Amino acid sequence: MSETSPKLRAELEGIPSYKPGRPAAGDGPAAYKLSSNENPYPPLPGVMESVTAAAAALNRYPDMACTGLMDELADRFGVPVGHLATGTGSVGVAQQLLQATCGPGDEVIYAWRSFEAYPIITQISGARSVQVPLTTGEVHDLDAMADAVTDRTRLIFVCNPNNPTGTVVKRAELERFLDRVPKDVLVVLDEAYREFIRDPEVPDGVEIYRERPNVCVLRTFSKAYGLAGLRVGFAIAHEPVAAALRKTAVPFGVSQLAQEAAIASLRAEDALLGRVGSLVCERQRVVESLRAQGWTLPETQANFVWLRLGERTAAFAQLCEEHGAVVRPFAGEGVRVTIGENEANDIFLKAAEHFHKEL
Ligand code: PMP
Image 1: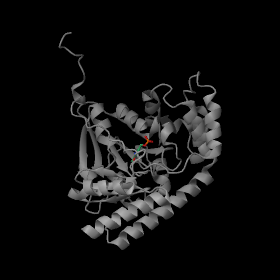
Image 2: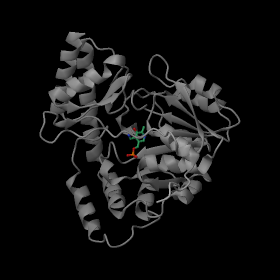
Image 3: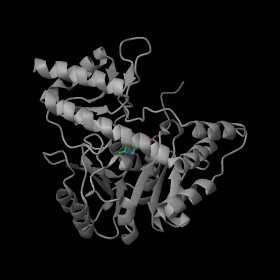
Image 4: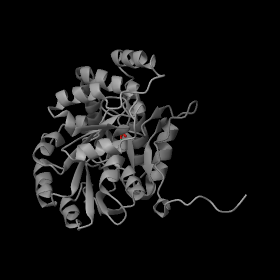
């Protein structure tokens, strides 16, 4: 065999790999997975029924235009169907956004640390990442992000709430930032955890988008709606951004199972948002308990908490695992812990208490 291998794009060299949250061990003590910001509730019976019914037509391709889902979303958000685009999870849509806006030499700005897919999908596009550190309070530094704009900037991610810190940017600061960003630069408001927000000062991206043609809102069915396994997310954006997203979509990327489940979930929104309410109560309990134990942590508006543990990150993750919960360590930085079932949260709190006492 020859030593020559197919020529691959140089941009792919050195791409960090996406680290999925580790699953809980099958038979060991780690019974709970708090590492991927998933929803701990199983699908609603009605959602299961619609998925099972759709499975009878697995020999057929899905509806490529996601017609039923688009109509439902247009109705739910009060936007024209032409302002919607679906994809394989919101990360799939984010990748399409980069394909639609960026090429070699272009720049993409985002806060760091933030969602770990941003550097990966930026590098795949050939564009350069411009990472703007979070403030000491773990919040997006929107002034510094606006200062980082150059004539090569094509796209800016604003992750609200931010993964993995759970922190939010508020209406006035976001509006001020958007006023500063040139109108030919796309600002993507990644609102994967929108439904968990309770702070009234955090704006709804869909309201912001209406007045601003360079704003695109990303949402997902993976978190509040509990459909992470089905891979369906969507964007709300003006033309021509939405049209560009439809062009860059993988044909038939969103399965019919995912489409039907998403429609059923929108129709069962009251029940699903009730579950979100329970998770938000649990979040409050977890945060208050951690503070009572002596921990300092940023205000979270998402379905997870962030502990900046620095060098003690790995040890903490290990201890949680020994207690029975898998969390998400970011080596040398901190640990993100998803709010899960009450018992899972209790296990995490017990591990946290144990760890803090040893400090
Ligand atoms: N955005 C953020 C901020 C996320 O945390 C995630 C999931 N980890 C996503 C997007 C992608 O979610 P999905 O592709 O499942 O919609």
